[in-house]
Image (tube, rainbow, N blue to C red; front, side, top):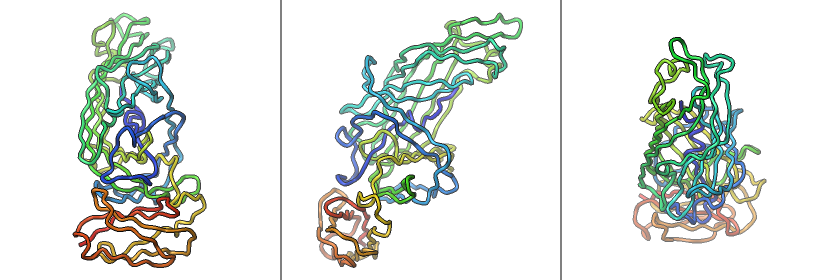
Length: 394
């Protein structure tokens, strides 16, 4: 038994434009998701098109070359009522005894963070003929609310670079099982069954910076989105109980399961402000986080570089030499209308220089006026953020 769709549902978070960003990037109740209701789309990708995605601070992750695959996922969010401590729900899928059933992950958003409090499940029945059973053999997942012994913390507030958190929760899902067992075991007829799970997660914010991907509508790069990078290890240990006792090993063998079976997921997730799903979520094969297994992209509500839908990618400004000694040139690759300005801050968010950009090239000098180090330049058109650039002064 294992949790499916973990990367989408159990680690649900994300966000939007960085026009109001602060550095280092911080998630709290103001910058986190507010009202996650509706259906979001998450796209699969062609794994061979995904570049190496390293950890880093003040980093820019450019994934505009990533190709979308033919498959996609849908995350359905809704408001929650009459569930302890939860105010929202997220439709998810769980695999148990070889069948997949729907559940609603019930989560809360408040000043302390985002937490999954449990699950709400409707009655669902499945044939077990494909698992070696007779045509009449079945598993029925009962209608129920599953309350976790402790919430799974998806993100604590405040959350920024270096934040670490762990969660462990126990849960029990009620079912009934009908199955014709080999002799000498008697057949099971609507026997009370339970899927008992222990879910453990360890999380750490290991990076922050900017990320760019393509918009699926037309293949154009989006604006540079400010993101936090969270590294997660999530393990789910499942056991099957019948009539209040561990299921017979012979039955477990018949349906291809083992008692205490554990499924572990290793992920890097890149979160934008104000949304529930990661902008990019990467699943790895093992704890080294070296080999990618699956990469999903959530491209809804991405900005174009200047919030105008028909802008060409060539309108993005270039900054050089970078790294440099403090004397930089900002070049507009083509003539573009509007008022273009820049704002340069240090890593604490303190402004060190502002000004207006010319249509072609603008010379900017910070040499001698600031200490060597890392700075952030935000370029805006008519007061709206267009791009962000990391400046390295040596």
